[in-house]
Picture 1 (cartoon, helix red, strand yellow):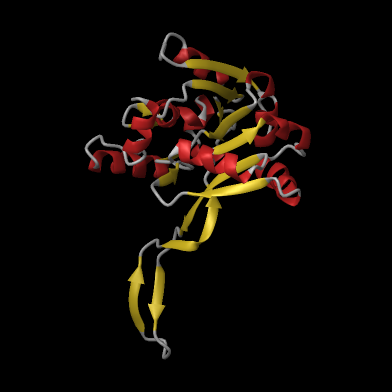
Picture 2 (cartoon, rainbow, N blue to C red):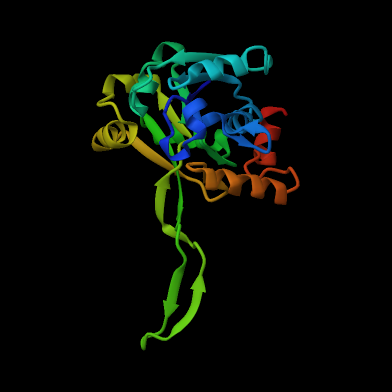
Length: 242
């Protein structure tokens, strides 16, 4: 199965880095985040990548030229101004009957084969991975009289889920593709047709939207002494034969 990765956005929240580089080239301890992401898939046996490029795509072409010969990498020009849904649609000719897709800036220890099994059982055209929302703010807990009892720093809100990427699509989904934006157009339309399902992931997941997120991911990796928390689950790696 191919893995389509969204790599073409301008990443304005990561300026000034993204003035000169694609956002997916932002490094985590020396390696671009896209390489960390591709390793999640490769370690589970999925090594055919279609990079949906746009903004500063020449950097991607130069970086991957001659690197990672064990992977099959195609870089597709999906336009400098294309939105997320349109970028995936423009990769359709390079994708098989069933394929993975994901954002280029989110890392998680998702068991991809379990995700795939869920998608097949569900029988829909698309499955997205959802994770519990982690608040960006601390919360205040108090009693009925307003007396503060405790603080909780950036809690996980277990009953509120957000889209974490790590998608599975049937290629026939393109016959139901509507609009340019994946989140605002494509997914709501699929949901209205009963063709969109969600796979819940309760393990590690974090996106890199800003330079602050980059620093946090580097700290996380350093604290783990190189054992990335987004590394593939051992059982999934064994199933892939790695």
